[in-house]
Image (tube, rainbow, N blue to C red; front, side):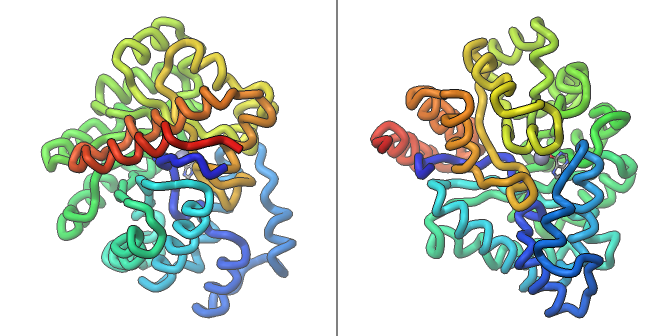
Length: 330
Ligand code: HPA
Ligand SMILES: [Zn+2]
């Protein structure tokens, strides 16, 4: 669906399509434990977040050089452009590369080769958000933030991802305080598999401005009321929730109830190579399976720009919002 939109919850490593994975494996002399792309796709049956993360980290082995990261990002941007994305705030997982001996410079410079020319090549403005792995130590997150010092001109904010349960936001208080002191924006995954209390903690302890997923807020009416009152954006990822079995089917997704409650929802693809669709596919699926009306879809698109970190360019935001209003569904 080509409705103009911003994508605010997108892990660049999660855009690694099987074809590109095999191409990069050949280029870098890395062997993958799958015979071909078909066999690899067979492994895309996840029972929960962890079963997905295992494959997500395994396949990263093919990402070695700046050009690999540039190719990965360019492939994403081309697909996103075809689905109406005008602006993308892109997550990356530095610790997952550092542990393999790939430097932060390689990752950031490589991604920047694509992001720096994204407006010219794809018509998409971009921002970069560096995520900490919550199943790694708080000290490792602090070291990662320190290592990012030379690249802070290219990094808009910090996020928190990977295995949620058992790794509450409070574990990362110190690194979020340090990030805030550096002027970085703050987001965190919370309430995907973890309890509503993690959402509250991400807000109160980490000072996040957006909550990634936030799905399980629906179990706590007082929290819903607060999120509505404070207009905290939630970056929902419906196809991801189905694939990771957070909801049974798309028809059971609470998104319509969340919109009815007045929550500021956005729709995103999370890890589109693994979850069966890019962001436009998520919009189309919501329309098909949940009967979301054109007004609702337009509201979601409007929210995506309102929730984006475009405070440095309000003129651009206004232009994108005008495009949303002018869009004609066909
Ligand atoms: O959906 C996700 N959840 C948590 N961590 C992640 N890292 C990549 N994708 C995800
Ligand atoms: Zn995510």
